[in-house]
Image 1 (cartoon, rainbow, N blue to C red):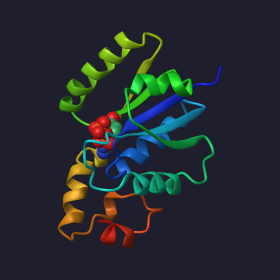
Image 2 (image 1 turned 90 degrees about the vertical axis):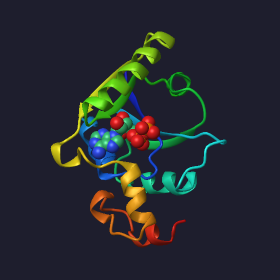
Image 3 (image 1 turned 60 degrees about the vertical axis):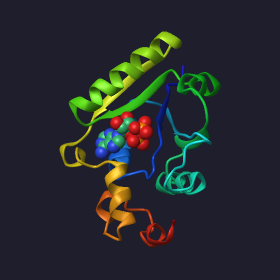
Length: 159
Ligand code: ADP
């Protein structure tokens, strides 16, 4: 059976930390679907269409990695696309505590699902979307935290 994993997140924006986790996971799964979770009542920094476009651009050369947007429970998305795995990245023990609760609840709601964690590479431990957003908002250079295939000009004018 084909091994399908979803990588859920808000990706506001998608960083080098996210990219690294997805690329490393291609050795474990046949297909990875990046799920941009959204909530119509919550405002994001970057529009959903841009976040989706950027992820498509980053993985344009890999037909086994795709992106979809979804509003709802992660386990419902897993059922919809036939995924057996949820992929998540771990940076710190704080991430672990947060992720543990989500993974255990998801397992209760959908026993067939397994959450697989990859530890971040050390240089990506401090990278998070909130800090990257702040740098961009204040006109700083966030390029080292964003995937190389993206056009940095778009981040200067994307608000
Ligand atoms: P969420 O809104 O669910 O926290 P994020 O977009 O912030 O979504 O992150 C999605 C996933 O990527 C989470 O598992 C998160 O722990 C992981 N992640 C975020 N930044 C990094 C990083 N620098 N290195 C490794 N994993 C990361």
